[in-house]
Length: 353
Image 1: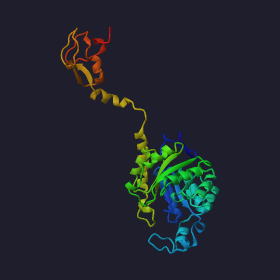
Image 2: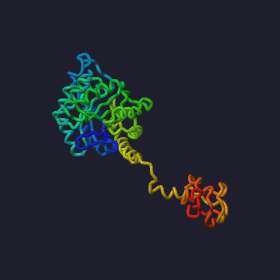
Image 3: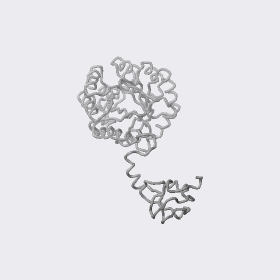
């Protein structure tokens, strides 16, 4: 049985979806806004809130760090300073960890480098997310795996060989892994999503929890992902989709996140049991609309039942139509009037002595 455990939550094929509200940097560098995002995520039914953690000076080349970045989404004159303006440190993380405990959701972050892994471990984060961009970064994957923390790996922009290499890197070290189908397009359209890969992952990795990290707009296709077997669902989250920043456009707002979580619960309910059987609630309809075998004319003792002596009519409280061959050729033992039920106590079947 595939399982994935974060803190006190164990995710299985039979569980509700573990819903991650990916805040990322949608807080715009404001701790107050981040706190509101945490509270609204909890109110909407999310299981976890997630940020992104980068050690910007070591992560980017000097050229990239110093590159001018002056567009409408910029929070600084260079790309590095833009990133620094959005980066939270220990004080902010500790404050938000307290908020998460207060509102009853998990809190962890994506680590983009070794220093950020250390930062998150030092703060005792319950899990580490690894971004699609690092699916080929086996040194970082191995380093995160060695922490013993649950790992969530996104696979956007990856080939199956890339995914296999990543799994070969982390699983011998740390088997507590969730593997998420993802498309590195922002925003992604339905034809970009390839949700069937969820089934591929479940087949190739029967021991792993599988999930979906979606950059599509709206909650609906995440419900389909759950139906295909995704049990970890990650969606970007914002207070206002028109806010400044690159991620807000394809993020869910609080009402949409609420619809996502409610819809996922409905989807689990609708999936129901793998056992095909007549439910108690179906019985009335089956009786009313079902069919049975009745006499198509008056029949007398000694008559041999012919096909034309049998009619198929509702309700379905007698012999089933599939039993017709058992009735044809039988000898009538008791008087049968038009529309009377056939029953084996009124017949002597051909196979009886």
